[in-house]
Image 1 (tube, helix red, strand yellow):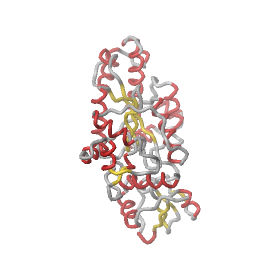
Image 2 (cartoon, rainbow, N blue to C red):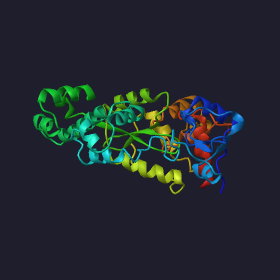
Image 3 (cartoon, rainbow, N blue to C red):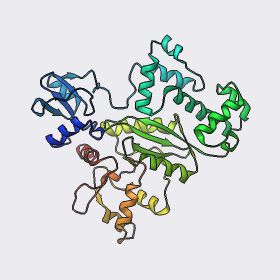
Image 4 (cartoon, rainbow, N blue to C red):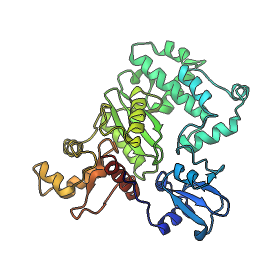
Length: 350
């Protein structure tokens, strides 16, 4: 079976030195002098170019006699929940309204400072802020089912109604009373071999799936929120669990089509373009010119390209399958190396 090609050696070494997250999942660097292998973003001291080898997978590195680096832990996908943290998150999953304090974490043999650092690195918020977000998410759903604000406040673990109202407004930017008729978008991370992604789901379907290092991510979050007139809240959602499962199957080569419902949040023209994107077969490519012709608007090539760039559901709405008229790789919000990796992966399993 064909394997995706590695980038040029000089390019990989530059990515290793710069700790470039866009190369996560594309290569692993093995250091001859120490016998270890690392992910591209490893914080350890960098080796000389002549002392470095590169592999497509952890399996290849292990088979060549290298052992995993203890600093960057390449055996775990970037963004994947580490085993030591899983019991804490499972506890929250069972009861999202509870308050887990530092002492309770210590009783679970967890260092609160370590938990805080992990959440700051992977969620850009503290663990306690994450808990508050989950409680607000739960409260939002409860009130939309008709529960009174006061009852919801105390059931969500708040000691006073005023405290609940303040916390709710800080997270959602609206009051609890106004929230009853306002939709929500649950936001959470999913892990992939190419680095973590941020997924967003409404009650209608998946409305966001972007790599977390995309430069336009904050803009996309704001756009989808305004388009759907919804509040963004950190938390879990069945659609996000579904997309994680389907992405795992896609990256393993066992899935070529996705079944998770989508909630396309764009203009009429954008949604027409995104629908056409969804018709590009697995492992195939199409040019912007081809897309414009299929829309019946052959002169709208630039407009089609802009709409592709505004696609907020990566991989599933496969803008990575669009190339230049000459077949060259062009424009991809997740980075051209990711685009190449995805195309190579699909061709290898076609």
